[in-house]
Amino acid sequence: GAVVSQHPSWVICKSGTSVKIECRSLDFQATTMFWYRQFPKQSLMLMATSNEGSKATYEQGVEKDKFLINHASLTLSTLTVTSAHPEDSSFYICSATWLWQNTEAFFGQGTRLTVV
Amino acid sequence: GIQVEQSPPDLILQEGANSTLRCNFSDSVNNLQWFHQNPWGQLINLFYIPSGTKQNGRLSATTVATERYSLLYISSSQTTDSGVYFCAADPFNDMRFGAGTRLTVKP
Image 1: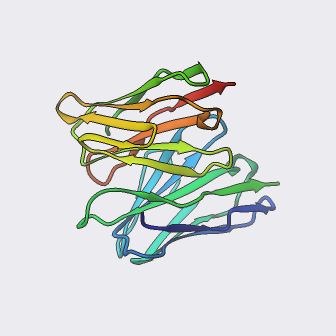
Image 2: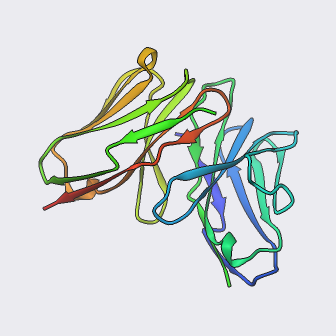
């Protein structure tokens, strides 16, 4: 299957700082990328959907100004957690798909964010 | 948005037993996938199966799109099958996960 690489795999940051997470499709062009958040022992909750070249669509309850998503190219999307707080600590996972092939989604390995 | 329900939430098996996990979804889908999440959190893609039946070794899956459900079969379970199994459904550009089934296989 196609490969999606997410970086970093884990990050620890101080409260009040910003953290950027990258999601790259390595061997295909991703028209759409999804960002998910997962708390311990819970399911993956969709945060936002981003289509290349356009603004992300955020799910209800997700703060746009706190979770900045950029999908500037067909191979890269970034999620920036701004002014991070301990409650933002979570596991963040991205996925990518390309609509004109089929709709199978491929997932990155996830990023574990700890805010101290 | 689409609702995705998985059952059972928890399943405990003896090694060698067979099991069936179910996923119901509330709308027509272009995509239905099954995943196994490993202890490190990585999602292992088991099946891309918006309709029909597929098999991969001891695992197989069936999706009946017209009745809006999918089944994941695990035969001759092994302790390494333990973990959380998720299904995710996507009507179009809106991929949603079920709550998962936590499978424990005892030796």
